[in-house]
Amino acid sequence: MDRIRIVGGAELNGTIPISGAKNATLPLMIASLLTDETLVLDNVPHLADVMLLKRILGNHGVDCMVQGKRAGQNGSSGETIELSARDIVDTVAPYELVSKMRASFWVIGPLIARMGEARVSLPGGCAIGTRPVDLFIMALRDLGAEIDIDGGYVVARAPKGLTGARIQFPKVTVGATHVAMMAAALARGETTIENAAREPEVLDLASCLLKMGARISGAGTSTIRITGVDRLTGARHSVMPDRIETGTYAFAVAMAGGDVLLEGASAETLQAPLDLLGEVGAEVTATNEGIRIRRNGSGLNAVDVTTAPFPGFPTDLQAQLMALVCHARGASRIRETIFENRFMHVQELARLGADIHLDGQMATVHGVDRLKGAEVMATDLRASMSLVIAGLAAEGETVVNRVYHLDRGFERIEQKLGNCGATVERISG
Ligand code: EPZ
Image 1 (cartoon, rainbow, N blue to C red):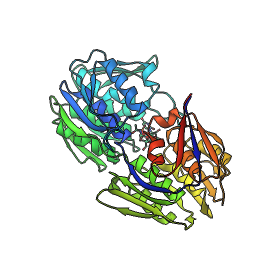
Image 2: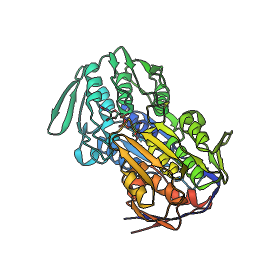
Image 3: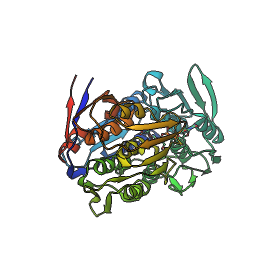
Image 4: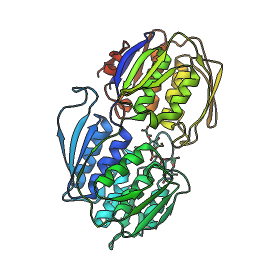
């Protein structure tokens, strides 16, 4: 199993190209199931989750071709992939595949809408929380699907097609908003999604669906209106920049000090974290090329943060923020409201000397002057990067084990950080 070795203490200076967003790429790839024509996606990041989804879609009969250069060979631009679901050969998404990645459950939306049936394995629990699928089932039932749970599978049927409806989510859910939007795009009549997720990735999916001929308004707000169409067509769409990768490297620069341009990053999708970086003591400037982050010798300030759906502070940056404030003056409070078990990085950060007290969903972090390198274990995707960030400022050597978590959502971190002066290397095996 690969490990990442970091020698702390160096400032970061230079440019980090921001990749296409993992959490936009996944639903965009899944949207290819909605049409028998080709969907071309540009700026696709080279990530383990993307590779896995190619396999999952392949199982349904989607032909996936990769064009052009691999990410890394051409600055910040990722791969171009062509997805063609001309013939859907199987409407079953099996346990072996769905259990590896929760987002693959989302195929249920396009499959039921286009094929009138789907049998998709329950994704099951995941390390960061129980993550049920009740709201997906609610939305699909609202659209007229009959749903049963059978042998660990969600079995959805709509032999006469789906019908537009009013879907009112009792809580904000990104995944069920994506699924409801995709399913409603091919339903008969009007659908209104209330309390929809406002995450920029929902807007990116809607933009692509519009290019495919869908009729959608209001994406990016909490009310989305969709008028169903008989069929969707092929289209070409470029994946939005990854706001979580952007935030992660911004926190890394704030931690290590230095001056870095996050090339291609978009400030509008990241206002809450960027405001917070200002509070912590970093200088943030949005430029035409991206976002520039600077911090010179000055110390870091403690903060009080609660995670929330967009436009609030994202849960996907909570672990990275925690690493940063391990070095702040005074006590920071971080409250996690989205997932009930997203504090597994706490005990790993403690190995580096962090002083963190957990009380339910609230973590209190007392800043320490000095972190010291140690061997640590990545527990989930974003938690892995919090350990890398802490390692950048720790004295001596930090080794992060179980890097496969990190490879699911961050590409070429050794190269991206290494080019800015950090000592970060992958140890294979
Ligand atoms: C998406 O997950 C992201 N994944 C997550 O990113 C992100 O943390 C999360 O949204 C919140 O922003 C992708 O986009 C691929 P939710 P998703 O449905 O859609 C509850 C990362 O690190 N809920 O918005 O699965 C759920 O348990 C990942 O890249 C129900 O109760 O999250 C949670 O408490 C991890 N019933 C809350 O809603 C349901 O049927 C929000 O989850 C569905 C969700």
